[in-house]
Structure formats: structure tokens, C-alpha cells
Image (cartoon, rainbow, N blue to C red; front, side, top):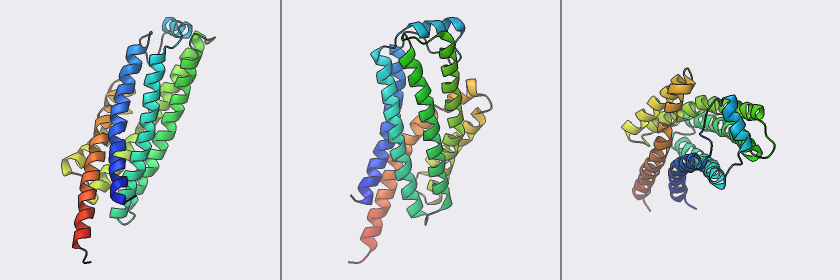
Length: 225
């Protein structure tokens, strides 16, 4: 498969990540019989422990988990393309490293969330719900700095080789700064700062595929037969 096709697939993976992530949150939220609470009270935790999780919550959870796999595909392909364009530059390598850390921590958060869902209505008690909720929230919070660093390094590398429109590249850097700043206020600003990247990554994926693909085709035309 050509680099052009791989890059397009990487861009589509970024788009798929955004679509499935949003769909998963919506489906899971609508299907949840107990309103989501970051820090559940004893009464809410008792309700969660006594209420089996319906299929819709698992569907939403699965969509989010699969969207994260698409994010991995986007991370690998985008950083690979930028490294090639930048002569194996350090920025793209740092972006990939930060992305790997982010995904690893996110899946730890998914694991604790799955344990809470599986145990609800099947012997889990309220105190265990609180513990698992805190572990899930804590690991999710720990994924924020690495996501911000991924966005910042990726946007900087793309700006360096002009692989993204300038406004989109600078927007990525702004989101990276906002993501790091949000760690100082995780309950309010921090959560809000996690929403824009879900839109920026699909936009960057498509723009990167279009720009890099066009550049490759132009270079091929310029090379004499």
C-alpha cells in the first residue's frame, strides 16, 4: 500500500476517533440508569452497586474503547509522515512518545471503569464503587498532560514542515497549553479542555492527509522520468 493511501487511512482514523468518541459518550450517558457522578456520594454509589449495567452502557463503552484504537492508528501514521517530512525530526518522535503514554493510561482508566460496570448489580458494594470511580477518574486525569503534549508536539512538527494550515497548527498549540493549564483545575476547566481535542484531531487528520498527499503528488510530477 502506498504512503499516500496509508496517510489517507490515518486521516480517516482521526475522523473515526472523533465520531465514535462522541457517539460513545452520548450512547453511554443516555443508557445509564444512574446519573454519572465523578465523585459519587455514598447514596449514589449504593445505587450504582445495586443496579446492573444495561447493554446500552456497554455499547457506549465499546465505542469509546474502539475510538481509542483508531486514535492509536492516527498517532502512528501522523507522526510517521511528519518524521519523514522533517528528516526524522525530534518533535514528531516526542509526539508519538506522548501519544503512547496517553493511550496506555487511558486504557488503565477503561479497565477500572469496566470492572465497575461488570460488578454493578453482581455483588459490588458502594465502597468498592467509590474506590473504582476514584481510580478511573484519577487515571483519566493522569492522561491529560500526555494528550496535551501530543497535541503540542504534533502541531509544532506540522507547522515546521507546513503540513497543516497555519490556523489549525496554532489552534493545536493553544489546545495543548489549555490542556496543561486545565490540570490545575481538573474538575472544571480541566474537563472543558478535554473536549476541543476531540474535534481538532479529526480536522488535523483530514488536513494532514490532504496536504501531505498533495505535496507527494507534486514532488512526483517534478521528478523527471
